Image (cartoon, rainbow, N blue to C red):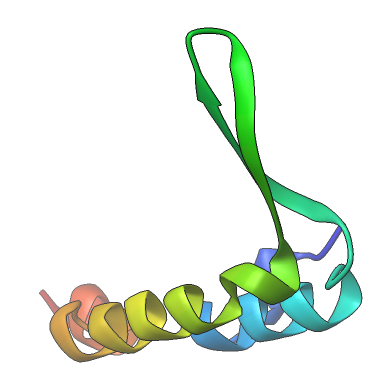
Amino acid sequence: MLAASTYDSLGALLSDALVQWKRETALIEVDRKKVKHTFTYRECMPEVARVASFLSHTLPLRSEREDA
């Protein structure tokens, strides 16, 4: 388990998780109780990086939230 509070950003946390568990199952696609596909963390990496980048550009920084 990674301690989220020790990371400065979501991107850094996700990056470390992807490296640590790259061969482990991250997502399971199920349709009508039948497994259609399983995705490893490595397979999810490009999409996770894209979402993390989007969030880092759209969400306020921690310091900006504390000032409000």
